[in-house]
Length: 335
Image 1 (cartoon, rainbow, N blue to C red):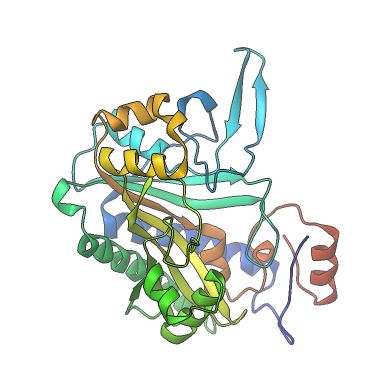
Image 2: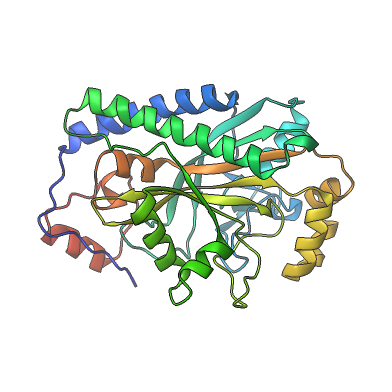
């Protein structure tokens, strides 16, 4: 069931034509800023993958991929959830070296996604991945990459403000870093999402670290697949959204699992059956490069910088009847 809520008195600052123009400007500008900040090259990426390769992102392990059969091959294909694992294999195949990386425009369908102001079944993001060395597998290196990404976002916001006076968001470049356990200790009576809201309200730009493992309470802050992020070296970048008065996750990212971390996390997650998949076998045998990577939401970034109340104002998707009615009543134009 959808949970769309339009703030009282909300009005878009741009009409449809201006919105489409601004979306193009943001996507072009941020891609340049990101590639320059992290030394990335753009590559082409798949819309679907062979499910037997183990390359699709399993998210929380319960979401159903969109599947279709291919007449010419007699096999099935799965629409990607993200390219978390594909990118690492691509860096290996394309012979990228430490300090260099790739990014791509990723389009996905998440059929089981709940719909609200920031969630859609259509996902578009900049998926990026970079080769690192063993000495880079540290919290300090992770934090520096986060600062570089936040800087690229802030520079893009400044660009938007110059192109469209009255728009652009004052992005706080000073990132507050906190682990999920520290966050639980700080707000023990709140849910994970409520904690995110409170900490982001206070600090405006936050990186919540170490997502995926069980906390002292016996609960997880949030789910993470066991076979891409190292749960001790990952996190989410959140910004305060003034329009919705809530936290907005723009990026899930992290230093990726090495063979040791993958072995441990597969066991913890009860996913030992994945060890025989081609991607996992290559990683466990040490064939794949050490990497850091993540995804940055394209529609969410546009939504934040253009001060939109609903993600449907910056992307074309299919919405339930309640969402359509709520937006129509508030004069919110869905694309």
